[in-house]
Length: 340
Ligand SMILES: NC(=O)C1=CN([C@@H]2O[C@H](COP(=O)(O)OP(=O)(O)OC[C@H]3O[C@@H](n4cnc5c(N)ncnc54)[C@H](OP(=O)(O)O)[C@@H]3O)[C@@H](O)[C@H]2O)C=CC1
Ligand SMILES: O=C(CO)COP(=O)(O)O
Image: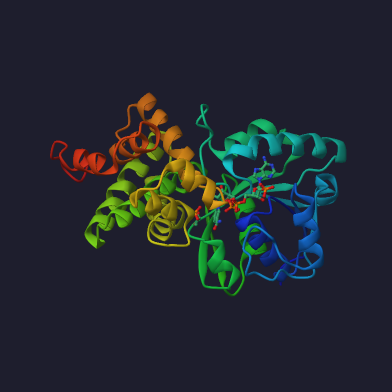
């Protein structure tokens, strides 16, 4: 039997609201923080989230609020599910609150990306913004987990990664249930690089499908995509084994093969000839891979790590290169060995 905790979930989009609902069903007392009052009112009265996960009827035990202080007060655990772009600012606000409230919760995040210009991973941003005496530890929750599947209680397995294994084990106990199984890992760097970079490959996989390519092309992209994800991660100290785990190949496969993936769908629409600006505007949810492609491309050049697929996608997204030309160029590079 798991001890019931007071948990604050910051970020009420597709993933934050789904996880908040699951944590309520796991027996915890959960407050979900969002910045939109109408969204909060509808969550509290109709138990629906107007813009995200529209088919999900949320538990009537889930309490939403726009007051971050009320959400965080007395919470022993905080789960942050804010897109990469907004993470630092929310973490900064949170740090001030935790100082005032004199609290030191365990901080979990489920954000998948790299910060623009600094190339920081989410846990690095959290470490920089939240003072050590305002937190017990930081844990990454990652892995193949579309909110759509978790909302219908489909079988899901993910990773809780922390340099302090006891913290990862705590998260494992809080989140695991009959359909959601959490494994632990001590490789935060690998978990975060896997999570961020798989979105680039998912856009590529969607684009291939949009262009009419088939199974062999997708398998090639996923496999060679994993090779460059691992290359960059290992250059920053990741354990290579992490990339054959849930937060590596697991998340890559789910995202690069599913219509539930926002990144895959974005790629598909690009492959069908839509403009990037229209794709972003019409998605209505974050497409992390668009921004991660830029950060990863710049980082790979800085570190001199070869990432040909990321580079090709960067040129398509940011320099207006035709996708078909990018594919021809990728296929006509010097022939090389698979194993480095
Ligand atoms: N969706 C999924 O299945 C999964 C997503 N993830 C990751 O989780 C993160 C969130 O994704 P997801 O929930 O899908 O995204 P959505 O686009 O569905 O929702 C984003 C949420 O974050 C809020 N938000 C954005 N910026 C800020 C900010 N500056 N301050 C406060 N709130 C903000 C939005 O609020 P508002 O509505 O007011 O704009 C919204 O509630 C991403 O990094 C994603 O990669 C990880 C695993 C699975
Ligand atoms: O990270 C995810 C699943 O594990 C969600 O991916 P998308 O953001 O592409 O939907």
